[in-house]
Image (cartoon, rainbow over the protein chains, first blue to last red):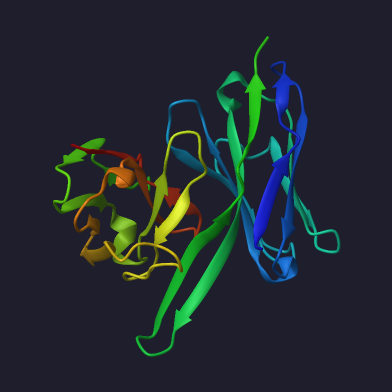
Length: 127
Length: 107
């Protein structure tokens, strides 16, 4: 079945680095944009980054720009998030999600949504 | 800056209808999506686009919009609908945007 499984979370000191992975299965990974979203303890969802299916288009939230790097390996069906210069405020559950796009040709409408989510991996930044 | 605003908490009596609101300028350009999140679980997409439900999602759930506001409606709320609900859309740079979430309590 369609599935995303994150890994790589853990405890790291401020200023440290961590690389998260997201393994995809059950769908043609190379057809889809992919996103990382995080959720700090007791807080709401925050989009972090996305990458196009080819890897040519990338975007980051201002809060992580210059510190985090998204990448993917379509042959291995893996999405990555390299996190450097980590801060206490980066403590969160990190989810990967599949970006989907649908065109309604009758109504001439386009929909963008994240339809498959992993269970998340926990990153704790603390001294 | 772009943002989506949701009421922090809403309650509904069992079996009644509840509407959750999401407001933002970007909703004039993009439809809102809605996600349900129960404690300790990942978010689940429940409504996307105008009012589309992914396979397996209850038909008690629906969506609508008017101007800069999107609405998520549960008709005949059940105990299992108690959860956090997040709206999501895009900003002017086509980046994802989430509302702050609404905690739904079923009384």
